[in-house]
Image (tube, rainbow, N blue to C red; front, side, top):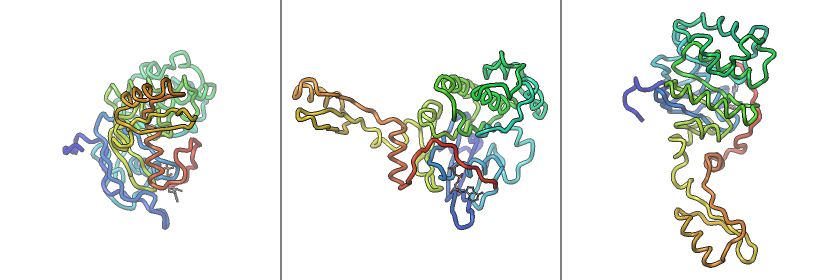
Length: 300
Ligand code: ADP
């Protein structure tokens, strides 16, 4: 990665977290460049939340070096916290205030907040600005969570499973919002179980299994070239399903057409991030890849 540490929003070396006799985080090295969106992937219990909460300053680490926006979160002060935006899995907001009231209230905590009206427009809640948060739909409440996280103009935004429970349309709209934040230069650390979300939003990503980062790199290169070789699949004359991995799928299809005419259910499949991810997690020996249920949170 980049040599100049000032280009880095996050720099982690040899991070470890031990709970009793469990190595929950077992020697992670991680760099996130400024302006980058990094997707942290991994099955439940892999150590994602522990890692992220250490970066956010909510958990103590057992060992290793951590620098977030140039500061060690273990010794950070309030002015550092004001440079972060954090969207937790659920807010627990009481919902008795309107969107505008809540945002105006929180904006006061920051030295250089965005204008509340601009934030409301950015998250697409103009029509709900004067509605009590408790009356909003789940997707709209999530937008309030994001609005609260960005009102302080954060340099680094933590998004923890931001679209869990969204319908497909709300998810696509939400992605549009995040892409705007990206284009403004916000650094984003995204944890998600939705691999399409990681593929759409992430510049780089990493897969954690058993407290170790087993793969890290550009999202479209994760797992290496080998994991991304296309698959040609068809049924032969005997009705037997055949498949072959080949770098030259078009050539193979032409050959098949010559041999078989129009092979039944011919497909050329390019491994998606999900396929690559499942391959990595299985190879690492994890029993439960990418369940989509919410996980239990335990206090530090
Ligand atoms: P993920 O976010 O990837 O699901 P976590 O970081 O929440 O993983 O958990 C990693 C491991 O550490 C799991 O085995 C989990 O049970 C354990 N763990 C997390 N928090 C605590 C805690 N406060 N006390 C004991 N064990 C914990």
